[in-house]
Amino acid sequence: MNNSPLVSICMPVHNAEDYLAFALDSVFSQTYQNYEVICVDDGSSDDSLGILRDYGERVSIIESTNKGAPHARNLAFQHSKGDVIQFFDADDILAPEKIERQLTIMKRSGADLVFCNKRVLRANDTLTDLSSLPPIDGLDPFLYCLRYNLPGGRAAIDTEVPLHRREILQRIGGFRLGVARAQDKDLALRLAAAGARFEYLDEILVTCRDHDGPRISNLVKSPRFHVDYFVSLIDTLLDDSLYDLPLTRRKELSIVLSRFSKYAYRRGDRDGAKDGFLAAAELCDYSDPQEGVLYSVLQKIIGYSSVERLRQLTHR
Image (tube, rainbow, N blue to C red; front, side):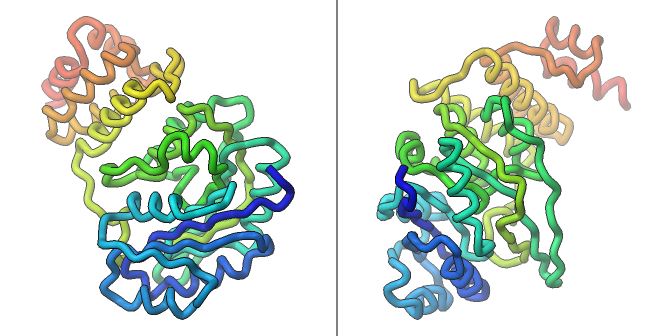
């Protein structure tokens, strides 16, 4: 990587007229100046496209029918030229020094992905700084993602947080289409499974909006959502020799899937839970260390579904 690599900022835009100018202005306020901006208008029905055009030659615009954020991000990536990629949503804000600070870490460490902290801008204009994350030093990035980057909580690597090295993004094909939610978490897990090197910069360099407008995170999840997601992820990782799943990764992935399967079972989706329990056992039949000894022994003998049934009977 040369001292001043081109950074491609890839942004999907869909009905973001209320926030788009704030997002773009934060891009054009970056202290690092060697960048390009590629925006994909994903079939907006508001004035988003008009706002993009107001920026003239500073923004490369690709018009598309509405196919969703993963497709739009991949399309922007395919049209980009940079050695370094910043994915960025049209309702968020970059700190002026974001790219410069993370690029410095990337060049110094040789990392493929450098992530940072963020703050949340609420609808009432209050700001909340999210807490620092555990250091990643010495920990397998795949295990780190399974512990600190799961959907639904304080996720480490949301879409706008990391700076990516282009080469490994190309290797895994960018975002996986068909993933309804947690697309950024999926990307990080697959990058880690493909051997990407991660670095963490403990600084707040992104502001994310929490609003009621159209956004992926507002979609309602069924009890089996995470089960279906992780089953599909396992299939993807096992079907492609690009990804590496040694026993340590299989164990932790199996535990995560079994926990989400228990969640689905306890909320009434027994069929979804059974699919998850089966996939977890096939991957690596490993007991969840959070469970008691009796639960673990019975799980080995009669399986998760039967233990969960017994658990429900004894808790009535």
